Amino acid sequence: MDVKKVLLYIAVVFVLYTIITSPVQAAGMVQTGFEGISSAAKGVGEFMTNLVR
Image (tube, rainbow, N blue to C red; front, side):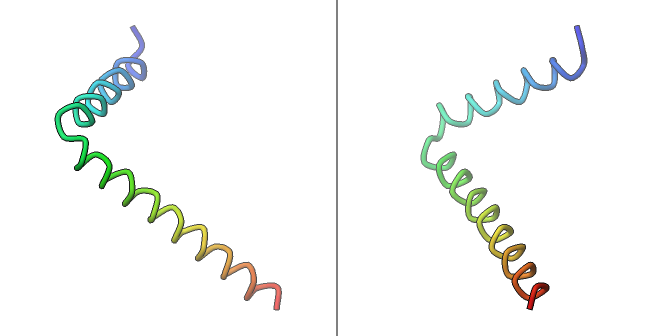
């Protein structure tokens, strides 16, 4: 079995376990992740806008 597949299976099991055992905390982690992605995208957009000016 490939090492990447094993690590992927372990990650999926961990995520499912976290969601099942503490859904409120898991939702908070997802929200934090999306906020981080949103801020990064906003920063890149502002950078590109200032670069064009």
